[in-house]
Length: 160
Length: 160
Image (tube, rainbow over all chains, first blue to last red; front, side):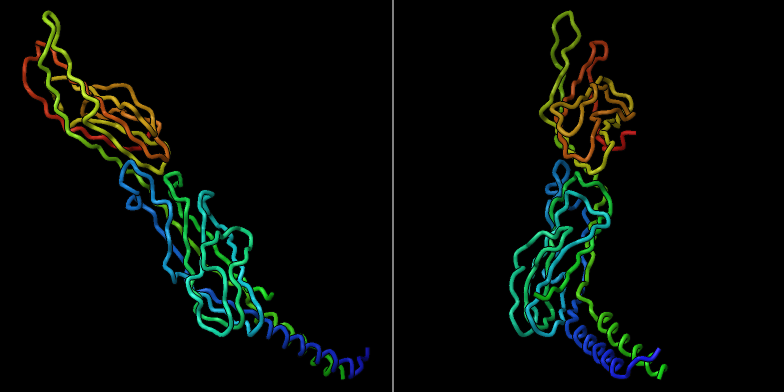
């Protein structure tokens, strides 16, 4: 079967254009850090006869986001996928710094619950590095059986 | 010509796919909460009971107190109970104990204190609990006079 040379050239050109567009639109987000909390008898409000402290916070820079997007209007969505998570637990996240970069960044500075479905977290323009996040856990009590509970929090960049 | 065709198509495909491979618009971190076993118990108060009265023709009146000593506990585990025992192997007089006004468990029947642990509160599970402790001392005329000094130990332990 003979393929016309002009057709081949067109295929290559389209391929290269597609590659270029995908490369430019490749919103890249990098998450650094994790959060581990150990709860034991020292977390009782007032020793024997009292319940556990219900709420725990990570450091204000527990998680750091670096985002490479080029320019445009973007949004970061957040959700979680549980490995072994207690139904009494609620996990919250907030943005504690703007990071570094040109363009605006807004929203996400108040705690919002991280659920099993994606929710809008904050919006921004252009590349940003060093966006600090803080996490909060609530719902802890003696009715949570001893175990190791794990969830994975996902951050996704969306072009808007 | 055929080789050129294959080469050009492969080139176009590689460039196209490389753009896809570079896109990483999602990243994640883990959150781990480790809850350790918590079994805390605290007894407060010191008590002195004196038997010093009787109705003529009857055995001496017993001495009772249910206000001086209290018990508090916290556990995040199931199937627990509290036992009670004394260190005094051969008391001169009888000292009985029973839990009153129990929350977070079920009072066991009144028991005469011995060096073998006896149930004090049962049915404890993932709870914060408390109770008053009622001690009743009794003596017969034939037992004469004297003093018993008990160190009473309460233990939060597995029910089985």
